[in-house]
Length: 325
Length: 303
Image 1 (cartoon, helix red, strand yellow):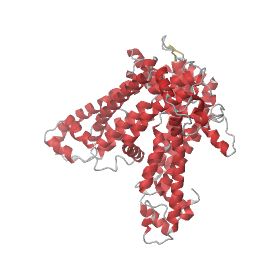
Image 2: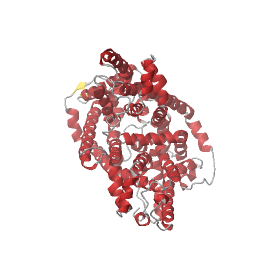
Image 3: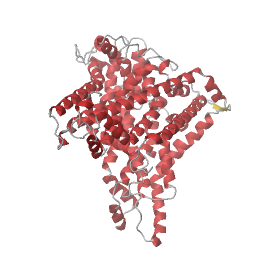
Image 4: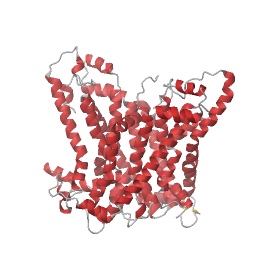
């Protein structure tokens, strides 16, 4: 993560200029103008669609606003109400539990399958990597639909399959206690992206490390835990951060499966009422824009705090090659 | 997994174990290892592919047989496709989605490439600070900007149209700016200096040198954004009200509300609409699978 700009001396942006000092001044000013022209779309977009909305959102979080009438300043009322709203606590709890199950599940499956692919010959690894990646293309809406169908307690494929082993599967889609686990299992069909990342990293580990380990008599498990995992820890950390942030903002699959846009308020399984789903309902079904903005800011703080903790803890576990310690 | 170590001294090697060379081991073991590996890979593949194959197969089954969970329809019928086409303006939805997706992908690729080039090639005061800001926006939860952004489009009077679904892409997107900048940084600087001495303009350096040299990264950006745009539900939920303007994910959600939850449950309609929503993405993957996989792999290594 840290090495990108410092370790590419041949890169366009960082190679030293060779122009004589005299000519540098005017050229550089022209360069600056050109550069600013190139990045101007982003600057405009940032000001209008990021900076301004952040300020506006913070302001709205202190108001009562339903779009139709003017915003009314209410101080910290929205934030106080957040703490009393049982659905905020419930949806936050759902989201955290979901993330705590989903992130490790995704990472373990991704790592296991990447290690497995690495054992296969080059040709078959390429083929199976494609197969593993393919379900990643499924639109999240369709994943929501698939969840309802495959995990249906009475007729679904999953419980049929469990029935073969004499296990009576739970009512995944309607039981609030099982729905999160069902959604995690369903989400594993999109693990392909992480597999591809980790496999690429595993293949980059220098083979001489394994050779010397083998001479020392290390078995597969030892080689994996002592060489592979430490060497790919930056990539594991990347996957960890990305899946954590995505997991905390889970929306589409649960919204598809359990909300009914026709009746606005309905949500048929409160075990899958995730934070962003509830926030979305508050904003666009009930038009409580001020309240939803306050919810968004709490989410912002939670995501930042969790990411900061992850980065702090990672210093102890992530090994960056070439980094002096 | 735990049974593997004992049979595989050469496991961690990249190849098939045959390149151990100097260390003679009983020949049998690599074969055993290969059989176990392949068996596991096939089993996992079956689990990965089953849901989709089942879905496609179910779309050709009559209503009563949807949940029989067999992979081959007992009765093969095209009725579901006919009735989806009659019940819903699917062609219109597909058209809307194609329009939004093309505009979104082209807009974000051109704008992100320009911005990435500005950050990669030039040195200017505040560059690192601004680029840090680009990266920081990736961490920002979409929920924070969602409401004010809706209000902006609402004030301009463009809610209810397809414009808010793609127009922000005209201003670049942090992830693609990052991806393209990485690629631009890996280009050799010499051709650009030479072209500059020949009097090429800044725009020409970008348009006629940087962009053609960066085709792989540009294609990856296009493909990623086509996928993101085609599959997005949230924006279409926020901005679209009228069925005639729906994109295909929004249409599928509407059909689910109508036929899956309310009144009579016509799951065959929903299954078929899901297939129609998903198939273009499968085709897209087969067109650009190499780019998809390489693009993802690069993302993970440069992160």
